[in-house]
Length: 340
Image (cartoon, rainbow, N blue to C red; front, side):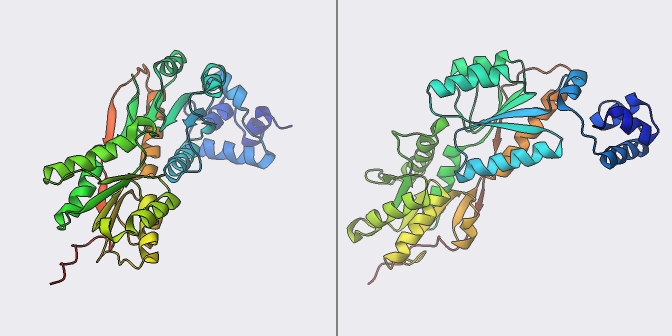
């Protein structure tokens, strides 16, 4: 098995110089670093993470807690976090955090508390006070994505403002008969995303002087969820709206598929707008508010690593509210004039 001494001998440098070149800790010239890296590759030497940790006090490993892996938003954030960490030479340990349960308690009391991480990123998880205390007691930087966490730098969009803007877009086109199809108010996502998007819709409708009765329908935030709700709501001409604000692009796509099956023309007979910036939005020509989950993941990594490099790291409760941008496509237009 190759050792650091073998690398140093092949590169004609001291062992300490070879160690600095491979660990990235301490100064060596670029020419020397290149020569040492080439020597390590030649003999197949790989730096031991445990040995490096003893020298630097770092594990080069970041813990990530997340409630879902298969859902689009979370998968996009997760892939972005992993790519950003790899670019900086960090590993990632993932914990798919369940709802409150004994298994969730074990994640905090055993895995996160006893395993060694340089920092933790919480993605879309609304932490209890006890869970926050567990993480703060680890004395490692923590960054949150999706909503506020006590004493922690968090990154999120303004769900109320985004939903209001989406609804105002439909109102500006001349629609008055508008529905909101979103997540169940009884089965909330963390950080009350369902309620916040409903609140934004309601605020826009009330400001425009329109009644709210019968304007909200709940479904799963999925394409099948939107499709089933579309078949139900759009199939009855007596309650068919001229426009729908969907709480996610996946719901919106399901609604468009249902409308097509029912022979309803989009957008001349039905306008549909969503929130997310899903990759399929372009395919379905969906008007949407893009929230850029990959940017959120990269920003979380940048923030966490900046805390790691700070000589006197201190918890920050700062919240970064990222903008969304309206992308107008052909799923929305002015309502068709009534027949004479």
